Image (cartoon, rainbow, N blue to C red; front, side):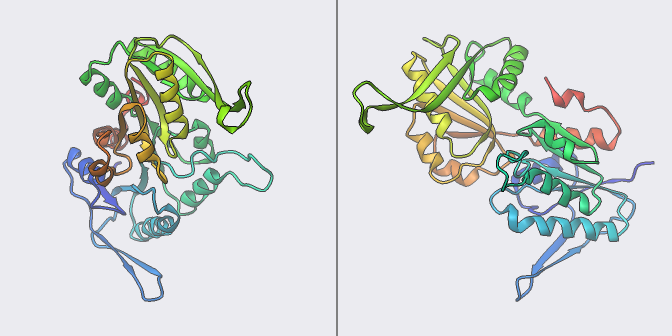
Length: 321
């Protein structure tokens, strides 16, 4: 027996949250978070959730370390209020790149995040384009990892880029790009930007990054495709290398636009013609200052996933094109 559906969010004012609720013909549930003078936080659910299936949207990237405790407190409050189920919706999964031990003095932080979310007995997790699928293995509850590819497919058709070449900026993304290009009937290429090496003349002014290309991009439009845009160093170097190899125009698309430090200005000054990301992370303020940046809406994909989960329908359609 299913309960009725409710949507809550730690950032109810976010565009993604509002659009997800609108696609579900729901309003975002009411709750309050109050900071005390000693910086502690109190959480209060303002509506009854007894017997309800709650979908709690946690659209946060810039301040995750300070917000994760608030998320745990909200889930615990809902459990105490006799909620039927709680599904945590993480549009962008934090620390997804840190899924293994690269050094003996580091921990797989993605596993720590999974342990924290399960410590409050959440029933399910819904996310998009995990950096590595093995993160799902850290959970004992179901984790639905949907893809942003349908939204990117529409963007490609809108810009009439069906004859473009899909490019991965690192060999690790080959499988992602190969699968997507096959579904679109497009060609793909692989770029590898290595460490800087000395030219014959020696000296720092003669150092250049060792780069290699698998595929043909000459006189072709190219679309660099990655899951996360953070420092964007490799993306910009890939764009420059593609232009050197004769590419006509260079576009870039990434699911999660973290854009740390001066990355957006770097992209703005690069040969990239347009940089499109999804709205898993709000880009409204960035778009006002960086004309090359555009977004595609994925709220309908999350809304459809929530509807299917609630109605016990398969999500296979949202996992691949």
